Image 1 (cartoon, rainbow, N blue to C red):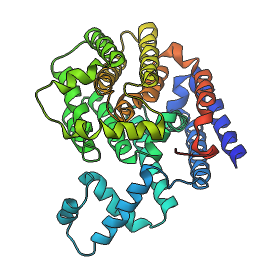
Image 2 (cartoon, rainbow, N blue to C red):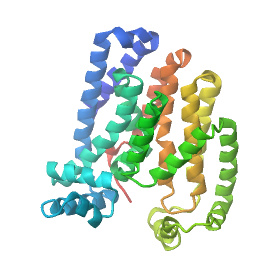
Image 3 (spheres, rainbow, N blue to C red):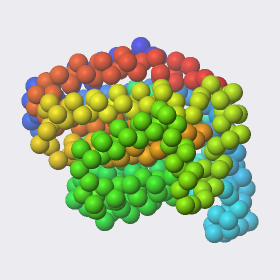
Image 4 (tube, one colour):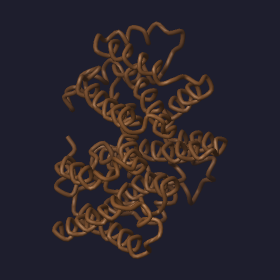
Length: 368
């Protein structure tokens, strides 16, 4: 089955050569579109089948599935507002739990549904902004991206929030700013930390903060991150945050023992820096005048700066996800938008798939 999966992936890569040579092929050649969408659909179905053979009932998925069962048991006796009051998660996610609860009571099926939801969100964003012909390619970008695998199979609640945020960004870029803000508010109904990203986004847009200032800010916060001064500064700010109290102290020691992590992990800073350098080089060399690329780079820099500020807390990588998950989308944006980069897209796609091959859950999904 894995052989068939990679057979159809090979077809998509070959089709990307047609995409490389002539952009009009994509827009007007119906056979190209048909073959691309068909191959993408087969990849999607085969991947779900292979994923179903893995044990998806691990880590946070256990808590989410148990919550779904609890919510399902409440639906027969309580109103929606009463269910909201008796459950700990955000309202948007509870509604999803209620819907999925009517569909299945099987843990594996539940995990697959959550994966499909989380994968569908960046595909919707790409299809809306680039066109339906982009969907099979952007699907591979996310399927072979280790961070997305973590989001889609572990922190699914936050994955939904991040996916909706991605849709809101392309909506904003399309000029529908009010709808985009509404979508950002909606994303926080799946994970409340999205409010932080919404506020940060509004600040850089309303104040028209340029990229140069954001990069200087990122550099300063990276120094605070490395030295551990970010925690000192945050503890002296004039507000009390239950979130900070809950995710520091004893929880850190427990997480460090379980996952081998440390506050202000250099590994996470390295990921952030590599992603930032890559998109900055693409913009500098090929898309310096592209407003969309500038928009995405500014958002990535700001949202990653938020991560650096809170890098001392437990599970700080989950704050970094908000910026990291933009990386595959930005890479695709660059190669889709630039005629010179477009010529090398097949090579980039091959490199991307090879680099992400070892992280595929279908080869054994083990959560410590």
